[in-house]
Image 1 (cartoon, rainbow, N blue to C red):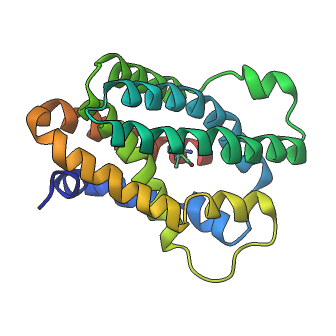
Image 2 (cartoon, rainbow, N blue to C red):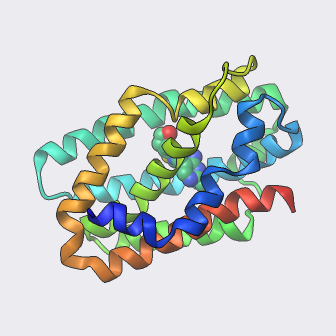
Amino acid sequence: MSLSERLRAQNAADWDAAITHRFAAELGAGRIDPAVLRAYLVQDYQFIDRFVALLGAAIASADSFAARLRLSRFLAMITSDENTYFQRAFDELGVPEAERTAPELSETTRAFQDLMREAAESRSYAQALSVLAVAEWLYLSWAERLDGPKPESFLHAEWITLHDNDYFRGFVGWLRGELDRVGPAEEAACAALFGRAVQLERRFFDDLYR
Ligand SMILES: Cc1ncc(C[n+]2csc(CCO)c2C)c(N)n1
């Protein structure tokens, strides 16, 4: 088994709970409570902020120009397409400016921010990849599992399409390949970060239904 496959298997309980979560099912059916989606997107926008910083750290610590290019193109995509989704969704849901830029953070969002800061400050490409790989691969996995027609509202449909498309699938496959290539030299640190990230992904969804 590859390192990425082994790490996923070691965290199967939280991984499977996250990718089969009620959140994904309700989103896929277009039947999510607007208050739940609103709360999710407000916290997630703060997640994305630190995620972009972590991606920058991966670009800086990568061991090849090819990797820097690929990560940079991805960074350009999420700071354009994905950012406009958030802005349009916030408009649709009536989220005021203060909540877009400086909401009260949940404990889980804070823990995620700390994890991403730690991975970035390690200055290790392998450790940055361990957290990035979870955030990308786990989202691809829940989005790919949804079947049936896309929900009507762009709020639901675009959040699925952003995570279930051929470009993204290719990127996740490449990220896993990078982790499989450089991770084994720092396996204990990578496994610890990967496991914490999977737990937090699950908690991020669970928090919405408490
Ligand atoms: C808590 C949380 N974890 C993972 C993602 C997924 N994600 C974050 S940035 C990015 C890049 C392009 O969409 C992806 C897939 C998320 N949104 N929120």
